[in-house]
Image (cartoon, rainbow, N blue to C red; front, side):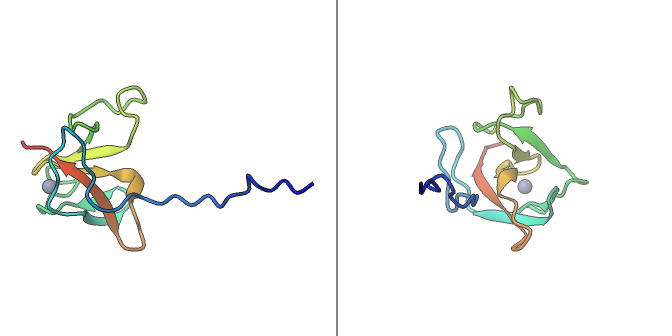
Length: 104
Ligand SMILES: [Zn+2]
């Protein structure tokens, strides 16, 4: 039998480009710098040890980091309101994708 149909390469391909969500405004930047997995530098200059980033949902609202409230690893910049998806951290290009912006 020839049954390797399920043997697909498991490549996670982060979504690129502007992501539009009804509640998030489109951001004017596609990515921000990710020095390490959890050390980001926002477009506004914010870093974790400055104003920091907070767990957020698809609507850009701050949430508790529980599986229930936080199904996706999104973070909002506490300074400028950009919302990033931590699942897209790329340590080769040192970027993380911006999914939108909330107006603070
Ligand atoms: Zn920012």
